[in-house]
Image (tube, rainbow, N blue to C red; front, side, top):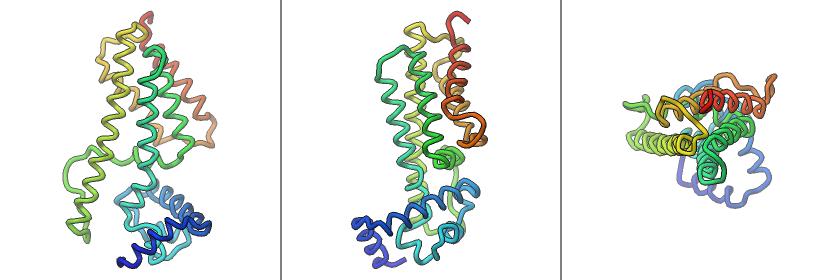
Length: 226
């Protein structure tokens, strides 16, 4: 991967030609499917290139590394979800209404960005210890650890926003639980996020139907009158 390739990739991205965009979208789709099947560490650029109908040398024309490809696939969606839940938190409504809306938006995002969110959720960004694999340079290891930490921080911010929604519900009386707002938030996020193991946009239940069912289940359990 030479500096010439890097410059060509930058120029191609700036040109945004139809052919370039078409091939890049095919690459993103192939990467998302491969990452979901094999995980970040298990996937290889060779597998991704083959799936996208490219040779490995051509792949570097569109992306610089597997980590860059992974980040491109998931980061924009993950950050958009954080913006969504923060918007719900700062918006109108009771804590209970906001919690239900948060569930709806996350399930809607699952369906709209399938399987990108599944890839993100399947990775353990809070894990400790080295992420070095054989043949990877110290610089590449540091880069991987850096963006793992960055995405982990995004996850922490998402959790904090949900926790604050639950806490608001406790204060306004629309939600009630003997558990802390933090534990309830972890439970709700875990319930919805586990969908990365089973949700299928083409399945019997739509994301909207699942969201409404989950919201009813959560709100019934947290109702002050239950």
